[in-house]
Image (cartoon, rainbow, N blue to C red; front, side):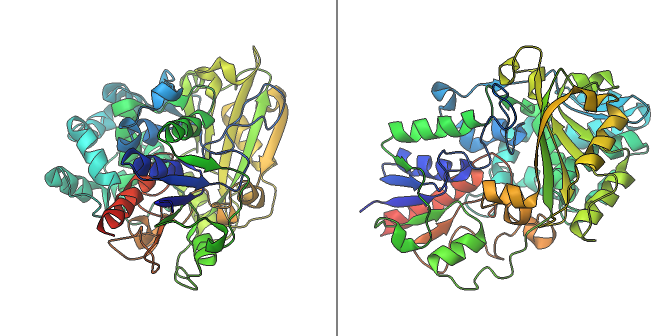
Length: 469
């Protein structure tokens, strides 16, 4: 009998399996798709030689993850590549604010009235970032805080809505960039703890950047899988699990799935009926005949580029998708251009590029024209560079990854109490009513992102149980 069976070979499932295998437990992973990866895959979606990431590409939480940093993933081929600028936020007038590795450079891009405000906001936390990141990403109490005072100070800044934090800034440049950081988790700016979301992304950039994995995000998943195999773990792909009886006997079962799928497979009935899914996204992957023709020079040097004219436009787009049930007229967009740092992703002289915008959960329309009109505001002539585009709305994204229910790439709404307490209001979110069944997906703390910490935290709960039995 196996000690643990993991269902789902995304970054969290693979991390959970690795953590258990490192401690001498026998582990097997079962994945419905023909390759490992989940939200960290790389595929030729458009043309031969153009290697796209169907979901995540830039990994500020990955390079800062306490779980990943404790594993020898570089030995298994993972190499982080750092763009000259982690992120840029261009404006319609051709200028841009930036999120740079340097706090001073970032502050200077906001202008003199907000430079000091920004430095005072982030600089107190940077010297303690590693401990703060571990404490923040280990919540709830999978481990006692190592620096409870700093965590409490961070909570005072981050727990209020982002709308309050934005009022600290006097000019729109800083407010807009920070609103865009919050929007990475598709949370309305007025939501609980949304200030913390923006702070985490900013601090992560200053501490270790927003890198991409050489060759694509698949390199993260492949490194985890190779390490697991060296530890004696087994991985079975093309293996869809519809009920627990489909799996071999084991002392524990860990699901890197949505709560909905877990309840169905494990026979938990309506245990997760109150769990809410958030907005979906509409994503376009492009094969381009050259780099994106951004008007702002800073955007040409950045791995990630946020698109939104000002904080009001960003807030309106978020409300449209999350509360009003409609696609925004001028969507907030996150774009990534791997070619600024990794020429291996496309044939010489060409580029891969992707952009996504928020839409209501399960939305069935086509946002291509709206998104490209928005891109043309900041990169005139963009459409002339397009060789092939691959579009994916909520239905297509859910078909690629069953965890993306209704196109929700966060596997659950990041709003209300669910931003902190997910998938249930519980201090032990990785457990279920079945004593041998656990959940480790992005539906558990610390939530969305390719960082493996949900898997790491769940593995702690599992090995404690295994040692007691």
